[in-house]
Length: 208
Image (cartoon, rainbow, N blue to C red; front, side):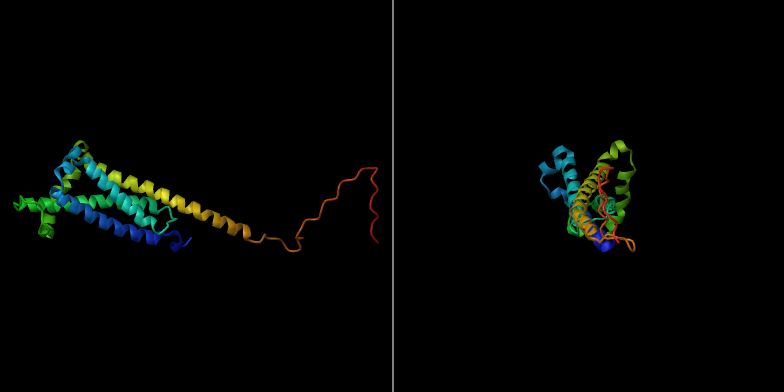
């Protein structure tokens, strides 16, 4: 099976582009979350909103990979890694820039001018501490990653199985149309069997 027919290479490229776009979008949502209505960010301590963003990332990654009609099952775990990695990259990027801006004494809502390499590098150490703490404290961070990865895994598994089922009858038809192999001097049709006669059935006279 070639890469073109299996959709492996196009699926990898499309999924990577979608993951990068989703990571940038999640980072922007974290950085500018203060501009959102308080009712949205404070509802459920922000857990429903973050889970919804993780599901949206998984959906976008799965749609990007599924658009190439993939048949290769290797794209299923790769898509899950793309979705989970997009959540991690977005969390690190948005939180690092926010922490770096706070270190410089900025109390106002984040601006586009705060998106700098300096702020990201200065706030990176404090952001990475979110992943090093005990699980009882960092479980929301890992929950968002797991939700995105698992949702993308299930969506891509469903998509790949549908594509393979849709193309399977075509392969079966091609196999049936192939001519049957016959050995040399093998008759096209096997001779008809003569009914076995008994003692009272006259035999056919032998030919000259």
